[in-house]
Length: 334
Ligand SMILES: *Cc1c(COP(=O)(O)O)cnc(C)c1O
Image 1 (cartoon, rainbow, N blue to C red):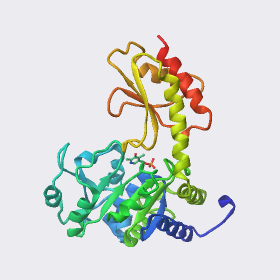
Image 2 (image 1 turned 90 degrees about the vertical axis):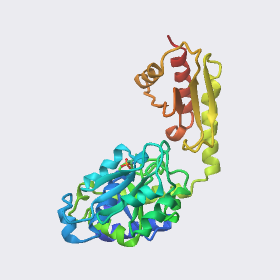
Image 3 (image 1 turned 90 degrees about the horizontal axis):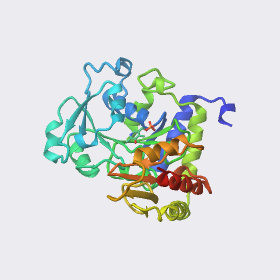
Image 4 (image 1 turned 135 degrees about the vertical axis):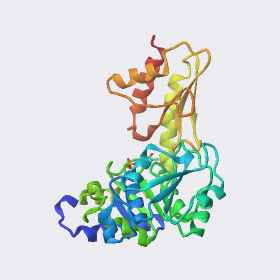
């Protein structure tokens, strides 16, 4: 339907942003082309603050505040998106810890923002509110990437409530919206600066344009997402995960169990651990058999250790039986 409507894109972006703000408790919002585009615009917003001459100059940041401080333990490949806007990343802390004093010492007159990344696999050395307290003492905004942190739906409001100035989420991950969309929310002046750095305007974000069909698609998906009955949803995940566990528990040499409530997991999953006495195919061999079979099956593997896990997020009813049977066959092969 959105494809058939001809609208003023600025007006659409502002109204869509208003919806995102309502869902997150932020002052303003902007639909982006994914969380990484959101990170690009966070950096562009904090460096230009909406100044039209600076917007046109990016990624050349001459004469701008262009340093983004980032805790070393929170570095991820996606943080290239900050540098894409021309920012320079300044790492603080070591690979285990970060003291508030270290963060404070890194802040100077070139600091544009402090970045904070949330991920199921990332370890935060200082909690977001502590980082916010230090940064705000020096009038430095805190920009957050929470791409993969939905669900739980509570996270939609959490980071703003904890004081973040800008937060970005993927629209195409747990929200299940159009895969190329993202959510950017935060302080009104910074979101306005982000908006001026992207389509329909010329600017560093123009190549990350979102179309009107994606804007409406994301809003519809988000509306569905916030109305999900999580009791029902988690029950479905639990039932599917349990079916996989039940199909595998006689395989000798592995421990298989449903894991529910682990903060590093996005919901109930079936987890498989290889014991010392395991003599079957290697983890890589199992993954290969699954992905090369018909239909191809992709499951999770080893963030922490020698493990495989199945998250039911994309499974349709009945598909858990196919995954269970194929996993059993792969584990018992060779
Ligand atoms: C997936 C991911 C991104 C990128 O999100 P897109 O919406 O695909 O652009 C950024 N940061 C983290 C931590 C992610 O997991």
